[in-house]
Image (tube, rainbow, N blue to C red; front, top):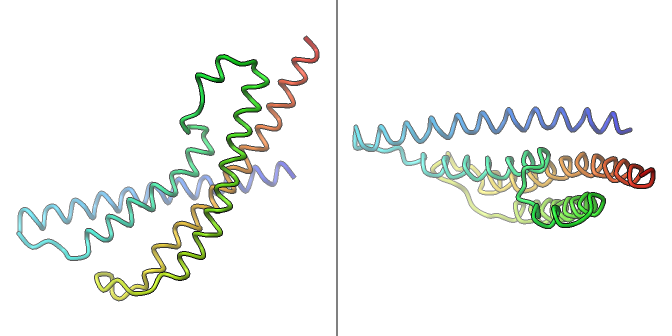
Length: 168
């Protein structure tokens, strides 16, 4: 079971990294194209601001699952240094559990909000406004997957620290 979860998490992590890299490349190219057209030819594209905003927000939301998976979130390091190693691991696991709860809420209400967004983006060929909003529940699902893997590793860490403490 743990092996299957690790394989799923690894595949999702690879896909998320690849998508973030592609979105960053697209964002860079769109902004460069827009700047050249705006300042060299005095004819900016009408769609570039909307696309670059969506790409930026999407990359940030997708990147959140990467930071959770890699344990790069700003944590309570000062507190961890003042308490025992077991308590520090428990605090870290509790923090990750809170992120998991947030992720579930983010996914549920993000989907509800995205489904109710009315209107269209004329700049993008009458694309429904709900389409870009779907990044919220998608990033929530990715956060749930990342948190699941982190919580499994936290449980293993707690168990090993507990055993080391008992044997000492």
